[in-house]
Amino acid sequence: MAQFVAFAPNVEVNGNTVTAIAAGMGPAALPILAAHGLGNIQPDGWYSQQAWLDAFREIAEGSTASLIDLVAIGMAIPDNASFPPDINTMVAALMSIDVAYHMNHRGGEIGHYQANVISDHQVDLVCGNPYPCDFDYGIVYSMARRFQPKGLCAYVYHDDAAPCRKRGDDSCTYHVIAK
Image (cartoon, rainbow, N blue to C red):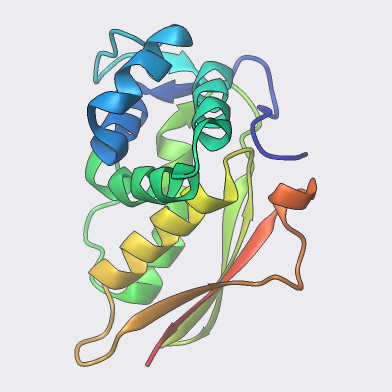
């Protein structure tokens, strides 16, 4: 599956998560959300994942700033979506992305964020879901930076040699290294 196509037709996303578009893009996101039936989002409501993916597609195809917008939306996810409590390390934070992903979606197959722990300072993530690559980069970057080990800086690298949803593949891989 490529990006922007839900894996199952009945999948829904909770309202808090959907509001990340506006949190990341600001007021420019509101007409895009409204155009896809997402104009009056209630935090505790549930909304069509495909409608949300359609909004992502419009953002991705809309301007030269789309990469920045998608990364910014991804970076807003940890502040808007539900995450497991008691995260206190970079490894735990990156492993929690898949748990949070499943907490904020319902109604069918949604894919995954598979964290492969290499060491206390390196995690590789395979993101197999219908969201845009740049959005996933923002989520991974935000979580890695927020919980990077003291005295180190977390870096996130997209593995260009691995499959990529921008090229129509099923997943993207990110290497997170704190140095």
